[in-house]
Image (cartoon, chains in turn green, cyan):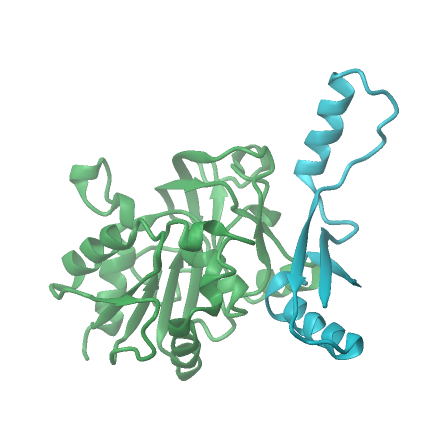
Length: 231
Length: 79
């Protein structure tokens, strides 16, 4: 699998993403600066976490208009897999590659802690390494992760299995009490209609090595490497 | 020309910052604040001198960048 990590001014998880991808694939991903107007030929594009452009105007709004995003959109339309984590998820919604929007957290606080996630859909290339119904522990670190969309969009996401990760308890029940930011339907991550663009607020790259205190993020990268590995 | 764009959360979209402001005003002893909503104002200096054309340009700016129309509405004033 060949991967690229897009780097915006203010990205701060790009190197964690690089290490997680390198460990899973044995290849160093290409780091692509936001001003670039061409993408290398890759199987996966990762939009990392951070505060691109200082979160000016709205989280992800500036990044969604940067030159490289035009190429990312084209690649996504061709079927290239795109993974957006945290700020990367915000960029994907602002760019219109995923529906909805990530609003300020319900309690107006920056939340930085491990959460439990229910893997609802293990049929995507991103979740091939997990079992449906599996509960995993992944950290979150965000101020604007409160996923919001209109009723129709939410129903469509639910009906088509496009809610990939939901905030839950350790037992796997997804109640309001298990929701760290107020997001609709406890949504932590969604995929596009075609299934090749995933956005999620939690950071799998931050728990992808036992040295970091856990490895529940590893199956995402290992699964991607298996699915996309042939090329 | 100058344009002033006011961006607000759409009615019905929960505005936790507005709620916090209303609660804080109540805590300070300002009675009767039944609601508060927070938005933002963006002022633009434009080279265009025709008001109608300028307004069209600003409309497009709002749609493409200044507002996220999933949750926000915008109002334009030309000066």
